[in-house]
Length: 446
Image 1 (tube, rainbow, N blue to C red):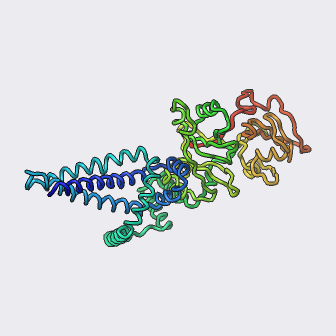
Image 2: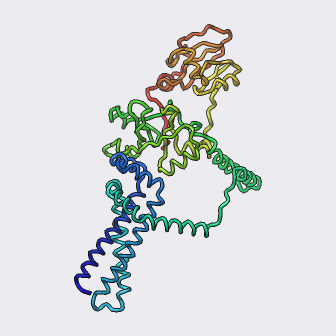
Image 3: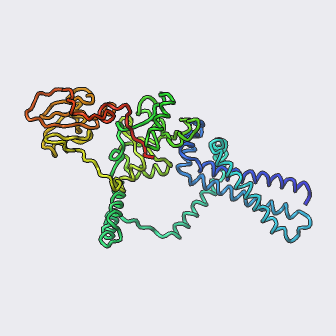
């Protein structure tokens, strides 16, 4: 073989190795992106954003193209590598063995390991470079991709037996039988029932409501951000501008605190927005697919209705986990004759039923709202309202939210009025009694 041919083959071999590295690196770059990296790519390169999102959501065609291209290139590298090694004088009958070893090592290093390691680190920078080239190869290799996909589906259909899934009724029957025969204990049976309920419950059923959201306002000074992050018990906090209706992402609190520079943007991940009506099973799948732990629930007007995390969803399966020495505090606690300590979120129906009362206010279903409706304004801690045969005093506030009240049944009905607190109506612990300065919100617990 003359020198000119060897040079041409050597150049072709280098080009093929470059193509092998490209296909391997492209596969890693496209499929190693997490949700936050994908969001950054979309914002920086809007021209490619829609196409990249489509391929990641439906990766079958993209993956087939990259695998076919890589396989064809590697076959060509093997053939040319053998031709070059066979031309070396003195190798003789060992050329086949030597070419297999050498080509395999070269392909592993320069066609697989090195480009994939580089692509996984620099995926965001490489994607806009790779995208137009990949789109070109998807067109060129389309006939082969269709052929391979068709053959693969036929083989799968031939080898894979048809699966018959259980209906909900059959699954419930199986659970009942398992419980009766002792295969499932009561706790396991309850968990299966909880899983079955996921498709019947929506995000609005278990979300943390807007009034309980704790978050960071981007317009606040950085010092307040750091103080809130150090104080919170949650792993993720919503980050918004001016109002919780403008949530821009979720802060990973441990990552933010461990960052020596406390860079808020760097520790913030993209926000997932879901409607109130989404079912819990669909939402759990969406969170897992996007590798997220928390989502923002929107109401019918597009405003923030609340937050929901994986933990909130899983809690519907496992139930509330209490420590052995803990007991749930009742919402209505007797304090003496005709006096009760009541949680602000307790429903009027429950109070009326338990205490034989007839509290009512238009458009209100909880005692905290009833107090505000009767007063016509937000009351301070210690103030009370007398209406509908009761005297209800605000015992604990957190900002404007009434957390606890003391309800007293009056012996004789009095005109509706607002009264100041008596000294014995409010606890002496001012941190618990009077208006607290920190608004309590919810994220996912750490």
